[in-house]
Length: 409
Ligand SMILES: Nc1ncnc2c1ncn2[C@@H]1O[C@H](COP(=O)(O)OP(=O)(O)OP(=O)(O)O)[C@@H](O)[C@H]1O
Ligand SMILES: [Mg+2]
Image (tube, rainbow, N blue to C red; front, side):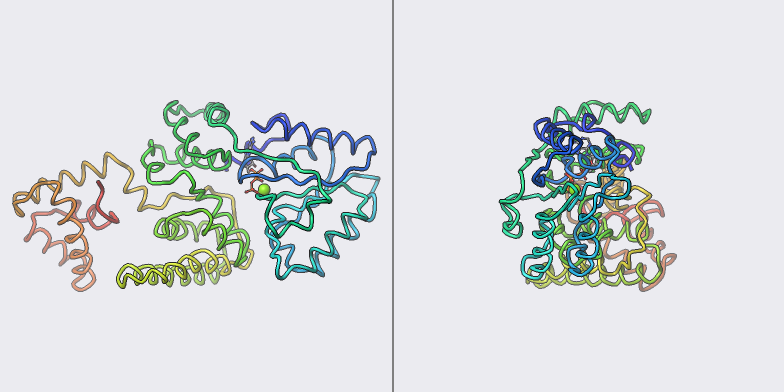
């Protein structure tokens, strides 16, 4: 993935957040000079380089990193066994090891008081430098840290910086991307460098200009971040919170997860379990629309995120980029879809005696579900025959109609 390929290896390679980077650089040089320092707490929005900054600083100074995150805080005994010995010694050959307690706001306040105690103790006794990261400094779950850390705020990176960065990456990838496209991605990224790089990757990978793909997404949607949390963590809370906070539309989430389960999970059992959670999610979501009882949506969202996350047994591969859902791709391979719709509407207008617009918006969805039902009942061949005799639709038309999820306006 582009994020991995272009992961910064020095603090200077990060874009934006120069104040924060300066503070980290001073911290590191103090450590090199043997000064005692309070732990740092890097906080700020997702995808702005908090974790990456620490990895880069460690790598360029020859420090090791001991990194814990999310689910590591759940098991207090294990946490203690990992943290205590690692922080009580100066390490083999006096090697400095940065202890990175990443995403510390994933501590669940109610259940993790044991973890709080271990961490508070380690802060007092550690012989190694400690760094925390979190999204929200004021999160109550990390109240216990506030007085023992030095704050380093990360802010959203500017559109301008992101655009320059993306252009450089596109160039290095040997791809010509229109400035207009890069500018749109940068603006929509809402300061999230990771999100912007993933969007760029999806564009480069798709071979066509998918501006409309971005058009169907809200600026706040960080699809890739949410998918990462679902597939990588096997954690109920992390997956659910990612889905809830992202404000990603449920149907869209289901489509994305659907497309990527076989890309991520490797064991057949995980894949099966993930699909069955997703199928339940989809059923509940349909129920919600049918009955107008939107309470179902909440459960559907949980099944599509946590359900799928818990289906994973840890045997995950992150090597391939996320695939765009075929359905969205279909909807937004704009010219093809629009012209396809128009051509079909024109054909139908002689049979249905209505305007193209009316056909696209009212008849096509009906015909689509009718054709799908006919196919289920009579099989493909018979359905094709019926489509031709009733509507003069040929095989290509039918395939096109059936595969598109809804009306395209
Ligand atoms: N400021 C930046 N400069 C260059 N690349 C960046 C920057 N921020 C993020 N990236 C890219 O995005 C990837 C993910 O960023 P990172 O993991 O550091 O985000 P984060 O701030 O820790 O987010 P989260 O709060 O979700 O953990 C990095 O590996 C890097 O490739
Ligand atoms: Mg991070």
